[in-house]
Amino acid sequence: MHKILIIEDDSKIADLLTSHISKYGYQVYHVTDFEHIMDEFHQHSPDLVLLDINLPSFDGYYWCRQIRKESICPVIFISARIGEMDQVMALENGGDDFITKPFHTEIVMAKIRSHLRRAYGEYAKQTEERVLEREGLKLYPERMEITFGPITASLTKKEADIIESLMDRYPRVAGREDLLEKLWDDQTYVDENTLNVNITRVRKKFLELGIKDAVETVRGAGYRLNVSWTEAGEV
Image (cartoon, rainbow, N blue to C red; front, side, top):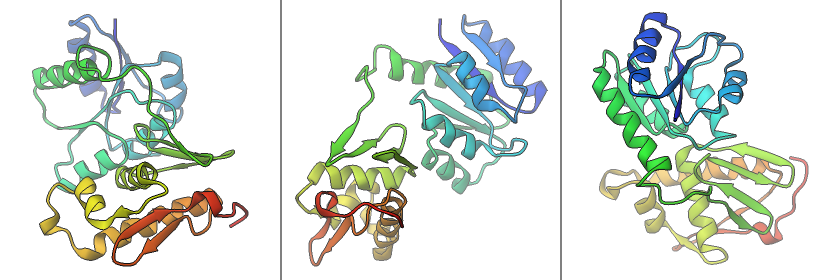
């Protein structure tokens, strides 16, 4: 029996979801202590999380990042926010889907069943989490996390995609066009500076790990990962 964790501070909505989802045979848990959400996550070890954005103390984006440090379980945001940027933020902070309020309960159920099938059932492509490792650098693409020795850094979706491409191509060059194609479906509407901005963010993530000059710019070609000869130390 799959376990669903609801992180929603509106008790009426939480009760509605709990009652409806339970009818389909799922174990449903509702977070009531919003200061210690991860404690309840650890206690219940859910297979899927329904997560609101507007929460006391810290928002849903923050809690999704905390979940992603430990789990790749599906996270579906449910929020009254309808802006495109809110949906982008939800996905880039580790979410798998986004449902706007007010919602139809059957839509919620359809998405829950779909994500559970993809994660654990007939559509699941793998049973183990992917880990890419190069020269002691470990990338966990699904949880959007990177480690180097004892240090860990959280990533956005685009940062994780860029680092994955660099590690896949290592020690070869990852072309700019290849990176743009991986990050955005339609390169036509991407400003040339957008990739540069994201590369700068990736470099800052490497600095958090204590790695200097990890991403080399190869003029006219793209970027190359240089973990093997960079020096780790205090930044």
